[in-house]
Structures are given as structure tokens and as C-alpha cells.
Image (tube, rainbow over all chains, first blue to last red; front, side, top):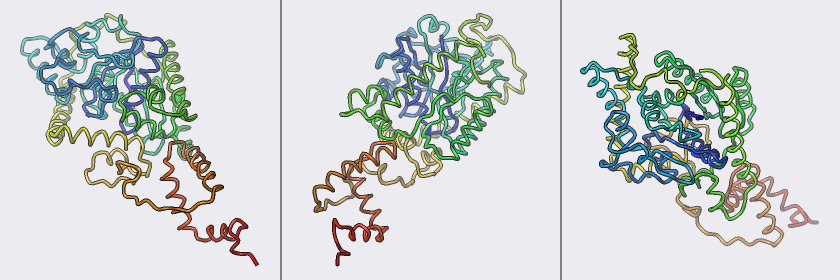
Length: 279
Length: 163
């Protein structure tokens, strides 16, 4: 199973829209896709794909409950489907993931058991047979490094990093390198970067220089996305992927928007090829 | 963190379901206090955003503007600060908001060229732009560049320089 976390330390670089559209590209390629929404923001992937009706339902089961051994039902019942993509939606309880996981760890310690709060997502996914059922797993984590991100990276071992080609974006890739290095040490794992994806690229010279620097450091930049404000705004308004938005809500085809879809397909295919060849 | 693929976490059984390894105490402690810190700030954030209806609206706006604002401002902090001022196109709920309708008298050749202008602007900006925005911006550009207006008025299409 191909698995990766779409993460960027800088906010507002299109993390969630990238995750949703990569998932759609995977589904279009005939693959079974599962997306986990770990983002506590209300404008999250579950909202974008319109599967967030249980977000604030206290009676509802949630992925976090499974991670702390308090499930209310089978894992399969957590999964919602939208546009051919299986999604485990975010639930408001995720905001307290750290508290609940730490508490569970303390309880385990009291009974002489071991429970690493950063490794519970992988356990839940393995128990649920996710690797046997799906071809691709994509996780959309929160936009700040916390216990949910640790679990996401530990479970997927791979990152796709959207970033804005600017001084700040460049620093955020560097900052991410530090965070991940810490995680690799703490969790005893190795993390692979499948792609770095510049977003809102305008072709400015300074931006080209940043991309050159990123590539000079050995990171792969398979595609760049230009600013697509109206397309992405449309997706959030209609709650759908860019593919569906253009097909159903645009009265005429816009050349540059079709190019954007081709780039999502191209990026998804590139990521699949990366994962086939161990570096 | 390295470029490319690494091991498949779902492939091996070396990692047991219950993690049995023990970490050095100081490491564990550091990770824990860091996590608690995050949790506290998350809880605080959750409280302030208690009204879910308004917070939905706020975060939705935040998400779309984060995608699209391009004013060179730090988008990370813009999303969080409360009394920020957004550029016009992100603030309005409708294209006509804050605008008055004005009758403009145009000759046919210009009406045709406005369609072309909108297409050209969209191509250059690589995004969709409404005709209303293009028209007002065109007017604004002229207001700020009277010499260009004079040039146009001197052409045969107007003939102000005609002797």
C-alpha cells in the first residue's frame, strides 16, 4: 500500500486541497483510496468532501476512540465515501487527542503495559486490515506539529510537502526537516519525501531561485502549481474536488484549469512511481 | 528525512501492535510536556471558537483566503489575527458589493474589445477575473495615467488633436 502524509509547516499552502485532489487522482487511476482527516480545523478535508456531519456528534464513534482502545464500533463504520474516495472524517474530539492519548498511556503504565501515544494510528490501521483493503492511504494532518502529526508520519513513513516558493516557504521546508529528524530519532523510523510541491508559483525570479535551491539540496519537485484562486475557492464553496468542480460547476472549460487537473494526475502518478522504487 | 521511498510500515511484523520498546526517560518526558503544551493551547483555541456556526464561517474564509491572497503578507499569521483587512475581492460577498452602477456610453468596437480584455487579463493573471473587476481596474488605470488617456483622445478614433 502506498501511504503518505501531506504536510506543510506553513499554513495556507493548500495542504487540504492538495490531499483531496491527489486522493481523487488516485481514485481516477482505478486505485482504492483511504483518506484520514486528522485536521481539527472546521474547514478541513471532511468539510471539503462534505462528509463532516458527525464532527460534533458526541455519540458518534471516532478514529481517536479506536486509538485509545475505546471504539464504539468496527473501523469500517468510521469510513464515509465521497466522489469514490473513502474518508475517515475528522471529529472534534481530535482537538484533545494529546490529552486522551497521554491519559491512556498513563493508565497502561499503571497496569504495567506499554502504550506509545505516537504509534497508535498504525496499530489501529493494521488491526483494521487497511493495507489489504486499500491501494493508497493519504493522511491530512493538522497544520501544526502535534501528536496527531506524529501518529500520521509514523503510520505512513512518507511525506508529500506543499510549499509556497518564498523565503518563508523555504524556511518551512527546512523547519520541517528538523521536526522530522526529531521524530525519526524518537520513533526509530526513517521518513521518505515523495515530492515537494510548490503552490501559487508565479514564475518570479526569486521563486525560481528558491526552487533551484530546493532541488540542489536533493529534493524532487515534479510539478509546480500556479495560483488558482477561483478554482480552489469554487471547490470550497461547492464542497468537492477540483475535478468535480470543473465538470459540474463550470459552464465553460478554462484551459489553465484543465492543466491543473492534469498536474494532479501527473503528480499522483509520479508519487506512485517514487514509492515503487526504494531509494 | 530523505528524498524518495523508505520502508513500508504495513509490511513488517517486526513492530508489534503494542509497542514494547522503552525510550530514555528524558526523551519521553520531553515529548510528553511538549504534547501537553500543544493540548493546552489547542483547548484554549477550542474555547474561543465555541460558537461553531461563526467559526465555520471564519475558518472557511480563512481557508479560501489563505489559498488566494497574494499581497505579500505573511499568510500564516494573517489567517489567525482577528482584525485583519482583506483585499476587496476577498472581503466582498458579491461582485457588486460596494459598487454603484453607472451607465457608460460605448461604441461597438470597444464593447467587443472588452471581452478580449477580460480574456487577456485572465490569461495573464492565470485565474478567473470578473468583467466588473476588469472594467473598474481599467478605469482606475486610466485615472492614474492621464497621459495615456490623452494619447487615446488624440487618435483618429476621437480626434482631439485634429487640426
